[in-house]
Amino acid sequence: MADKPVEVNTDQLRTAAGTMNDVHGRVNEVVTSLTNNLNAKGYPWGHDSYGNKFTEGESGYTTSSKNLMSGADNMSSSLSQFGSGMYDAAKKIDDMDKR
Image (tube, rainbow, N blue to C red; front, side, top):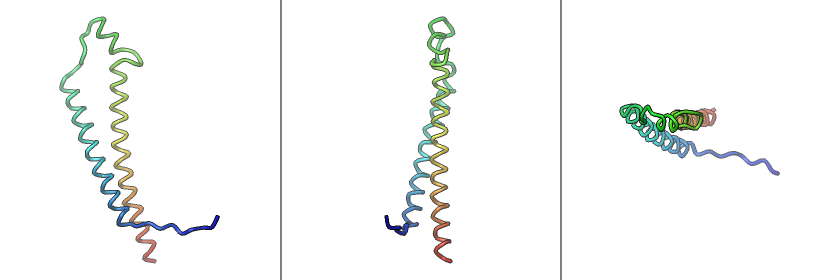
């Protein structure tokens, strides 16, 4: 297989990074809004035997809710890191081309 040069359009990479950062912002707003609304509502189930069966345990509402929110926070953080990495890559490529 012949080696082929890698071509990168840094303007397009920056545009994609901006889009990624926009997505991060929107996802972060949704996660923050959801967290605030859930916290404002307080504990969602009665403190009775039926409510406890629904909320407790490894697959109960409480654990599932925490895992879901943690996953959403991680996704938002990853989107931000991807956008930053794309900007950094574009800058490094431009700097290499100036040498």
